[in-house]
Length: 394
Ligand SMILES: Cc1cc2nc3c(=O)[nH]c(=O)nc-3n(C[C@H](O)[C@H](O)[C@H](O)COP(=O)(O)OP(=O)(O)OC[C@H]3O[C@@H](n4cnc5c(N)ncnc54)[C@H](O)[C@@H]3O)c2cc1C
Image 1: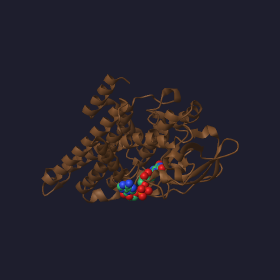
Image 2 (image 1 turned 30 degrees about the vertical axis):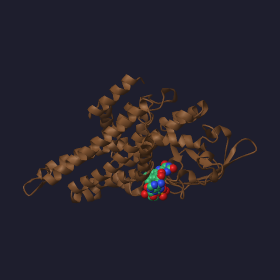
Image 3 (image 1 turned 90 degrees about the horizontal axis):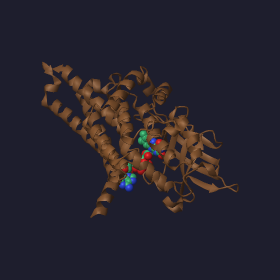
Image 4 (image 1 turned 90 degrees about the vertical axis):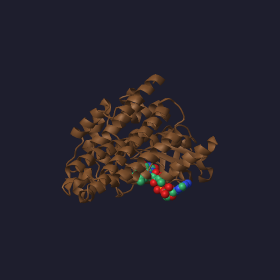
């Protein structure tokens, strides 16, 4: 993508809130990704398989994947506009989160670091919905301190590897067909010891734990994964032996910048609904939106949403131009994750009791967005990155 077209794409994305690419996905999702059983599936922690298939057929899971591997081959800005539209149009935030993590974490790493055979083996099946993937780095004792991991690998006599250990809080693990697993040769080597493996779910010794119910994003299955003498071949190494830290760092730069794009779409939908409610709901003989306390809350929601979009597409522009985007990505992650929590609280308050009662669908937003300040690196860890970058400049 040329510099000129990046500029044009980003300016159009930023200035046209009703961008046709985004609008098209909102309309499609509003028609095809509406599940009347959503509230019950949220209680039951169930993924909507049919919704996943519809999204795969529409092409959104493979929006950013090259056409050679079955994707749509869109540029990063167009793909983000599509995911923003998905977040607006689909109320099943768990389904959207599940697709987003695969599309913005696992697939780009496979496409960037995989061999031709690995890409051909997995990418077409991931984008057409016949396979699902999970990204495994976190462990019970190693969260923010990622490279303190204790899942190990050792070389076998036949040139393969054997993996032992356990990973925790893995999005989509109960539904995944393939796992991207980070393991260390020796925990004392820190980041220098880490290698990434592609492990099929049916490999002997790999066990997926039961789905762990959580506060929000409950329709995304999520569990621990254990590796008990799991044998893999040399052709299942992603990148090269010892390159795990570089792959993790590349994945985090993308994840922290872009994974909240659908949530920004959901913030816009939330604002539109809250504005509509504040016009319609009457108290003391007037619409509640005529009270300054309420209207200022709506203005704050608008400000947070706008700031989040600006940061998202600024990070996308830097990324597309090949310029350093680590600080912009960390700022975008802090801004949109915290803004979504604050705005969800404001939406809840504006809806009064309806905001708190499950059947009206407002309280779900608050539960769904709370995880955003934790996954993909906590807000504290993002601030560490920004502070470190500031220190570098002085
Ligand atoms: C919804 C959800 C989905 C997830 N999906 C995945 C997945 O698919 N794959 C995967 O591998 N993991 C996944 N995770 C795990 C996630 O990456 C970790 O939860 C996250 O990195 C934080 O680790 P932790 O939970 O161990 O918290 P800890 O690291 O123990 O942090 C606890 C507290 O200490 C603070 N803290 C820790 N270190 C520092 C520091 N250096 N400076 C300042 N403050 C610090 C944190 O900010 C936090 O407030 C998911 C988590 C959630 C909630």
